[in-house]
Amino acid sequence: MTPSYLVTHSGGFHADELLSSAILTRVYPEARIVRSRSPEWIIPGSDRIIYDVGGRYDPTSFIFDHHQRDAPLRDDGQPFSSFGLIWRHFGHAYLRVMLVPEADLDAVHASFDANFVLLIDLLDNGAISPSVAGPMAGMTLPALLETLKPVFDDTDPEAEMRGFHAALDIARTFVEARIARSSAKMRAEGMVRQAIQQTGGSRILELPMGMPFRPTVVKEGADHLLFVITPRGDDWSLSGIRSKDEGFEQRADLPLAWAGLTNEELERASGVKGASFCHNARFIAVAKTRDAILELARLAVEEAEAEDIGTANT
Image 1 (cartoon, rainbow, N blue to C red):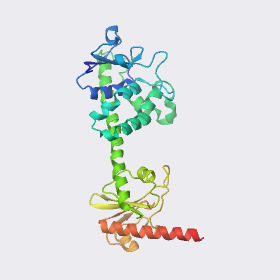
Image 2 (image 1 turned 30 degrees about the horizontal axis):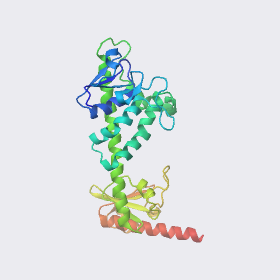
Image 3 (image 1 turned 45 degrees about the horizontal axis):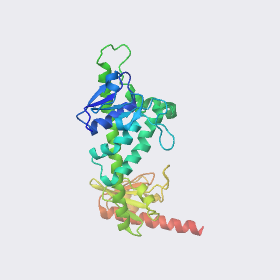
Image 4 (image 1 turned 135 degrees about the horizontal axis):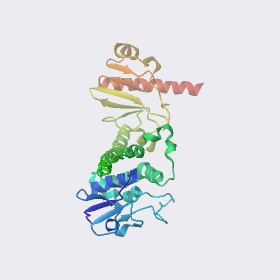
């Protein structure tokens, strides 16, 4: 099917049909959005996809509503909004349009569903309250999208459509950014895994560029790793690895004698020519060359291992 029309309801707009539209307009860029509740538009036809309106869920007829009795539920009993239904049926096609590698499609689809789509579904169905965001409730994406609705006394008949399309542009930007980040994490996982294999038993992991590394380090069970080095523009960085998902505790801190020092002071304290910065919290250091950062890493590992031995003997 190649629809000519993407049909959703007229009137006030919400995050679920906006985000659904963001998906469908990428999969079917030639189709025109029609916002209407008129019977001639919300009756299924071979030229249209109908969503968030129409009173039923029938994928074979390309109608995806969730407001009716016996509305569709996920396998775990949680409700769908139109966004969840559209993502369920068109998400993989969308990811292919966004050039996500075929090998990563299922993982990216599932991650986006669990961490983005589901929250919109629950909020739209009243299964969670905006108040769960506390003082930031008015700054969530659904709330911000709805601020683009026309004000009550704007009588311009085109105001609502202008607001919808302005909100759609923003919704599309956020969806595409989240998908890009999710796909990038998959690429990073492969690169980090390869680097771990090459590292062997070393305590120091070297990566070709800055990237998310901790999830893969944990997933691969690389408990021996203490520090990560990466190029950073004209410099090189040495980073610790957080012990837990939450908080700032590191598997090992950089040496206390380096804390807060820069340039000549850090060179004197470390004995490493080219050392240029160490954060006062001792989780990152910077040097001017790869040789210098490797030497800082070696010294940091040496001190961390000595501390471990001292603690074990206490």
